[in-house]
Image 1: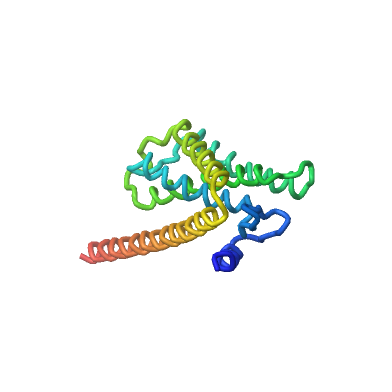
Image 2: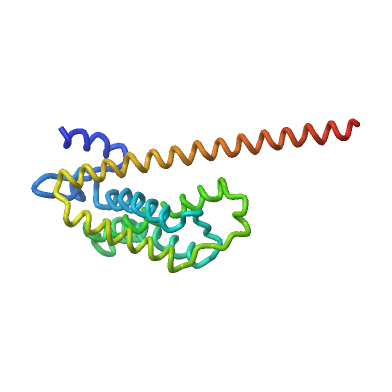
Length: 202
């Protein structure tokens, strides 16, 4: 039952190419290593970011952003240069690690975006350090690799399903926040325009 449910759920986000799926305990995990890394890394880094950056993550400095861009690019390199150009053969480990790096970076970019949605002092706040951002990516990659290495099929499949659900919820919540902020800004701008018109009429 879990196998069929996971195949359906993960099929919405993963190509499920049989040549890249991992077998754990003799059963296939219906999420490729790269997608496993993306979802685990995203969840782990977002959770770590909430703990480390309790007041919000500000990516105002160039170096931390460069670190995150490199993390995202690592997946593109492994997928594009290795997988499509054929200059080397990606492995389950390289797919997992670059997926974890990319997922972690995307989570921190999203965390910073959510901070910017609500923070009034976004432009003047001191940005996160390169060490802090790199540390979260490294911890997320390490924990994700360990989780995959020690988990049996049932635990890994359940963990991946929980991360997928959490990530979908987080992205939808961010979209709702974005809409609310823009609607609120439009209302304030409209009220401000009305006040200006009334003042001019007087």
